[in-house]
Each structure stands twice: as structure tokens, then as C-alpha cells.
Length: 204
Image 1 (cartoon, rainbow, N blue to C red):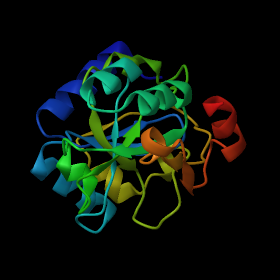
Image 2: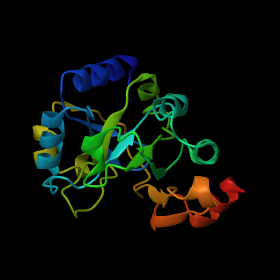
Image 3: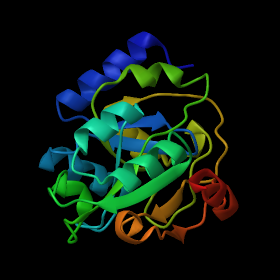
């Protein structure tokens, strides 16, 4: 169970460039400050992930996400309200080139996550700043449903490790909304915890 004190420690770790293992709503993740090049380098090194490969930016509150991405069009904002929080990563336009360290070579696209945390991790909803987030596994390896399933090298190399018990274990669905504002179209890039049928129903 994540406590309010744990959530404050998590926020402090992010503020000083730390890397944390934490429970999301789907699988265990790694998190760091999205604008800290050194923290992002360390996170990628722990995963043995290729530098420059895009990651997602996770907000723990949908309104904070929408405020931070003020340039998003009205239809895209409505889509995010319909889909999030939830087990989904939304690819959205990023004309302001925000969070460049999370974007990879395509600075004009951004992956956005707002998890629907279970009771064991709900205290993290008090975190008011976004984090760069990636799954807590070796690149290409299995996703971690429990803390014990996170590779020992990752747990040992992180500055903070939080245990939220057993998670569902299916990673987030990735849906491309980059053409949604102009054309009303979307597509699933990676199947995951939220089905295409549920996405379609939520988008009406």
C-alpha cells in the first residue's frame, strides 16, 4: 500500500533527479523528471533501452495534463476527457515541443498517460507534477505485474522502490490521436488493456 508519505517521497525523488520504481494501473513502471537529461539517461540505462526512443509523460491528474498541454485542439481535449484516466497512452500533437526528452526524434508527437490507480496506489494522485514513465522491465522483456517481477538490477539501481501489490499485468493500449482534431480519426498502435471497442464506445 502506497501511503501519503510515500507519495511525498516520490515527488521529492523526482524533484532531485531520482529514478523510481512505482505501481501504475497496469504494470510496474519507472519514473523520473521529464526535463532532466541525467535522470532520463539513468532511467534508459536501467532498462537498457536505446537512447532517443520515445517514452510517455504521465500525469496523475487529468486536469493538470490538459492545463500543461494548453495548445491541444478542442476535439483532442474532449477525446482525452473521454478516455482518461485509464489504461491507455494517447499519442497527441505536440506543436510546442514540450517534454522533448520523452519524444524521441519526433518532437511534434507526445505520448500522454493518466492512470486510473487502484486503492493500493491511489495516494500517488496527490503528485502534482508529471513524470517521464516507462515500464519497469528490461527493454523487450516481460512486463512486471508484481514488484518481485521487476528485474533485480532495476530495483537495485533505482533511488526509490514502491510496492503497490499485484497489478493487472497488461500494459496500456497506445492510441494515435494526432489526426483526431482535424479528421476525427484514430488508430490503435499497440493493443493492451483497453480494447478498441471500449475506445470506440468512449469516443462515441
